[in-house]
Amino acid sequence: MAFRKIDIDALEEDAFGEDEIEFQEIGELRPLSDVEAEVNSRAQEVRSLLQRGNTSGALTTALQNPPYGAPYHAAKARNTQTVMEAVISVKVVDMAQVAKGLSPEEQDVLMKYLYAGMAAPEQYNSGHLLSFHEKLTEVAGQGCIVRVITDRRTV
Amino acid sequence: MSDAPIVNEFNQGPISCHAFNGDRTELAICFNTNVLTIFRKSGASWTQTSTLAEHDKPITSVDWAPRSNRIVTCSQDRNAYVWTLDGATSHWKPTLVLLRINRAATFVRWSPEEDKFAVASGSRCISVCYFEEDNDWWVGKHIKKPIRSTVLSLDWHPNNVLLAAGCADMKARVFSAFIKGIDKKPAPSPWGEKLPFNTVCGEFSNGAGGWIHSVAFSPNGESLAFTGHDSTITVVSPGTGDIQSIRAPFLPYLSVIYLNESQIVAAGHDCAPHLFELKGQQWAFSGSMDAAVKKADVGITARDTFRLMDSRAQSATSADTKVHTHHQNTINSIRPFSGAPGNVEQFSTSAIDGKLIIWNAHSISRGLGNMHI
Image 1 (cartoon, rainbow over the protein chains, first blue to last red):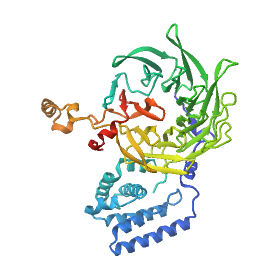
Image 2: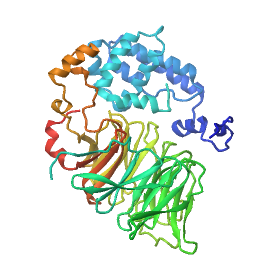
Image 3: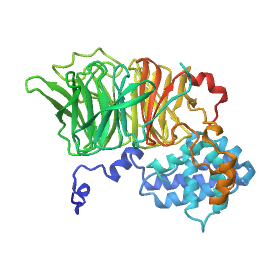
Image 4: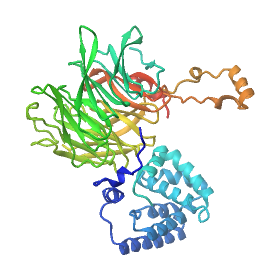
């Protein structure tokens, strides 16, 4: 049997492309300005909660409404920073408790951000993220990790 | 009957699909090859009786109609065959089915009345096939819209008309597969009233993306359960508008069935069947149906320990590479084995480890106290 030399799937009309998948999973994209405004206001809110010492509240706030969607690169990076600030402030001994206190959706979003943070080891403390990853996996299981991999809505 | 699962090891390679005949005396298995092997029960084991070889590529799915005793197989070679047994010669005669698909067939199931069967395929359509008397052959009608990717699994509704499909475009859908001339108008159901062929009666997703690996109607047809690669199980009931998604902390499930209206069994990459139960109005995970295989069965003796230390410089007990479940690899198919359709008492699972295990559905309630994940 000969191996094809042409990419038959690229030539096919009506292919199920990335744009269609994104639209199906994420829906209509909001204007960039709205998303950036929301990310910035959330960053300020998380900072103030951290200053008052409310680490679990800060983390929960940081994990709300992540900016899913292809055009929002800057907003995503900004939001990752916000989440990382909240994550770093959680002490290792408190991690299990904090993880248990999150809702299943928040646990999945947190796992996405842990992986996003570990992808930039020069910026964020991977050792700390790894400890949190371990505690979160004990609570949410391997299913949580699988959802990070399969979910099209990336942070 | 004893609670322990009945393990059948065939040692012929991974099992891609299996099906029992109506009275469970015969078994059809495909060991990931082009050939379907038929076994007959003799005492506690199975002896090989026939080999059905007609496909050019690996067989992906098989189904055995319990009353009409016909076998349907579908394969990556874009074909399906209906096999009928010639009583005199005990020879299975194949009849080619024209599916008219240009990609592999992935899944096949007979309808409850056994007058039609549906074949899911990679060409983004489902072929609903029925026997046309005039031309003396099986003909297929396509359900195409709005499927966007490979259809991975199917399940028929008890009314013989509705068909659920789980798809790689991350959606589970319910279609009408009404064939004029074969089907009578179905009674109105929560899924819809006027149902011409290819009507979409519902389109659902899991919420976190992921291919839908398996779909199953509840025994009375009022609910649909489906499981996806994002490790979630969702149960939808259009009558009440209720949609429940359970995010499981386990690896994804590849196959799911209803034992009865309030119990669902799912199995997949965790190599063990898991039970989900309806408590009040909420579905939740109850436990694994596989009591961890005891250390004694795994068999690390003192002699083994020293031998391992010697040959592999490994210390003691963490040297076993066996998984502590009966199946050693991913389960890819669960099928009801005994009991009425709404009250399954035993079910069979086949896995990539080449084993076929028959489980007792009630064993969990007796062992629940001892089990832990």
